[in-house]
Length: 348
Ligand code: DP6
Image (cartoon, rainbow, N blue to C red; front, side, top):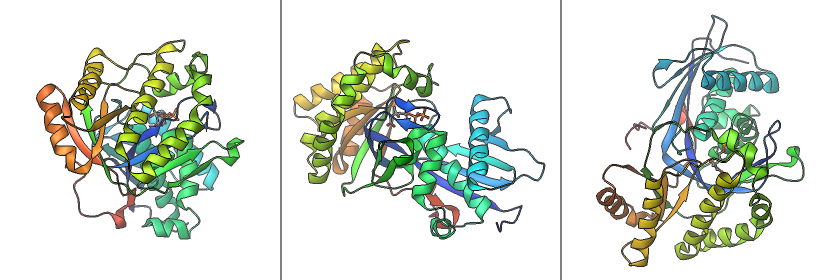
């Protein structure tokens, strides 16, 4: 593959927030999800990853400007994914990976989603000598293929390969999984309320494993197609009053599974619950129209119309002054260096 050893390949991939959650797996080895999931790609919460050849012979990783020790669990996971990509794509060559996020890690904003999408794009761009997403596709690495490679590093990352809305269907076997853009044209805002930026005590990978032990899990799976129908209809018809209650129910259902599994995990501290209740109260009083969703973490995503985002953010900031808020919105998808606009990803 043509690639100058000293070349830098920079990929920027967005995070995504699931409206129907990927929770639980039928097989961890093949990263085969228990249910279909649907997410909105974000615009500003991104990971930017640079891949250079490392003639010294080993993969090395630096995160937010600091080199990671080889034994650091994050470095080990990245290394494992690079090995998988080399094996699967027939690539060779060690890489020096520099990666940075525009948001705090491990705090419920899916850093593994944007992280593994950016890593997959940057690494394959380097090994294949591709400067743009079109170059990648021409060389046989289209987004669908890369999405399937990316999910092997972290499942939710496969939905970060496109902008807008993205669906991930499990199919009847691991090989029949389908990741594809979901046809909805609706720019919404996500007011992210960072209740805590601390690393979460139990990784989502561990909590995924426990899902099957929750008595709520099988009933949840049985209800997914009905939920899918209702939610996708609300997205297509752009009815926030229909979409919102489904978002809230889905987020609480996932946390219900997490809290009732064994071992049980609770990602929601009392302060998060206060934000959720406050949001519902404000809505009932007719003061704002925003609906919450959550990832496997303590931070709240308040989904609202774009013209309401600043108002919602300011109201939350006044009610919860100790939290940090970020306004994000439906995003445009990943970029490679040559595709990158001259924007500062830290400008949240
Ligand atoms: C709660 O993608 O982090 O964000 O495949 O084990 O890396 P692994 O799991 P991960 O799961 C995150 C699930 C979620 C919901 C979602 O994004 O759908």
